[in-house]
Length: 105
Image (cartoon, rainbow, N blue to C red; front, side, top):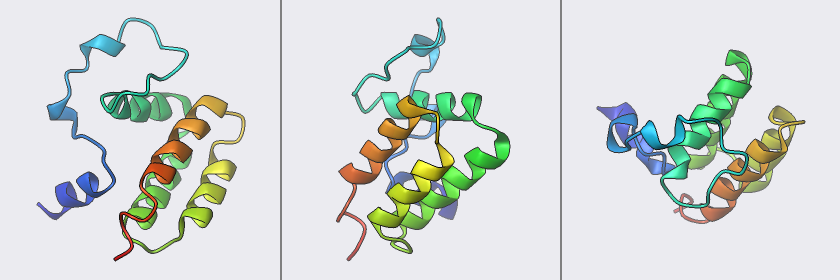
């Protein structure tokens, strides 16, 4: 039960909430800016990154969502993890920036 709460704290809809069919026909080049894109963004990240890198990415986002690291630190880590993956980098940075201030009490 606790895990689900953590996931929602940084606005990642759980797999069950979003129908996934719409994104499966070919990979979109630009990830659309709708909230529904968050799930496909994580799918895209999981597909493109190594398992290890994806794991680090999730740890970074979780730490940020729980207020353990500042947004600057999170953005810096994302830059390192997603080097060469501009689309992913921009999208994840947007998530961090959109959530700045909503986690720290």
